[in-house]
View 1 (cartoon, rainbow, N blue to C red):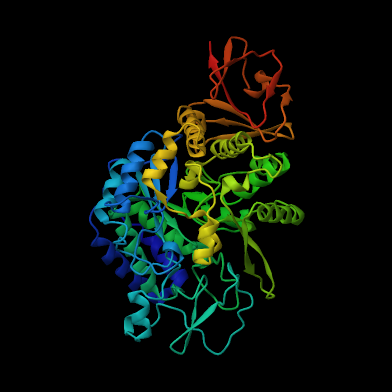
View 2 (cartoon, rainbow, N blue to C red):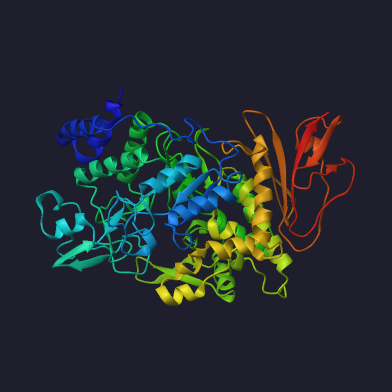
Length: 576
């Protein structure tokens, strides 16, 4: 039976007792109209496992003449990725007016320039899908906002009109743009841009419409729903308007509804904020997001590679804790956006953050800024292709070192507790696209170039091409990872400090007991280690064989152990 008691409690806290009962009736009436939401052919009604890996891609990432982009993407993924990734995050594929899809003009349609719902359904036959819930804002060209401007009675309070010049100085700004935009005499709240108009969740009809929408996505095949920019959802003048209690209540309501109606659906929160705020979206471990983007990881790995020192990364990883065995991190290094800096404030000193900024600039990257409450600007995001970011300035163009360093960074990401997500351009060894920044005027475009399928496949067929080398190296790591139960996304993680230039952790599955010691040299120098394997594996190794899963080589317990520059070793114990 629906959890009416919890829903009534949440609605009461959000909208007051007099309105809550009526809203609950409206909610239940809407839910009663939904058909049974069936699992897709590849969905699992349960937890994630060690084989789950997410590809992050645009719907038109792979193009070719005569084919709809989504058709080409499906063809390409089925051919190249069938045994490497089993989940695909298709970045917003709805009609839009700006921000490469994140200013949605129609939530329920597929952009005809990309394809159709049939194309999405086809992808869902072979891959588990993540859809974007871009529910903080909607396009200024959307039907909802046009109805608001026409003063249609139903839509009058769908958006936030600000009158009488209140003090908005406390509002946290993610971008250095005006908070309010003038539309036909109304100053309307626009957190991200003048074309992205914030929805007003103080109007319960907005919440009901969004619940309808997210259930529609479940019917259309989504198994993961990414809650885009969710931290900014609820606005209260006189507050920061970020991480407000009402926002968490809305997520709790969504989670409870999905638990009742479609329990296979997993919510994933996208909050590019300091780590302690980020992990608050797990809630109590059972009532909010099942996955949280691990935003601190990309800049921490970058810092580790720049300094050849894993100390800060190791200390942070040692402190990663999950509130329950049913939630986990969504780990990534690159995405369609840049590398957020805010998540490592409080983890890295400001001097190290400044160094990250300068290192990225020296490699041809860009730095986006945010507006602070005092009106000043500070770095917010590093905009650079991740391969370019890891290309050493003193490597004298040695591509071997660049590739090794890039694979090492991803080996770290694959080993840390959680589910890995890998951006298309990272998986296929792309470089940055500075020309795109000039064309679009947006820094993030540097990592959003579209690919010709013919050219891409030609690159991959050439064993000496950068794309082929990167893809081959990452594919090997992914296959090895998928073969070990130790990489359980809900598993245990123990960090070791063998050397400042070695990131070391033991991953253990709580369900099978399988364990893997992950060792990563983060420097360009050989690292010699003294390892007590019996103590590390917490068991007698006298009759056991140690094997490096990466190389397949056995390891003698008594031999001196060393790691070549940027070498990855994933060591497991085989019972003899």
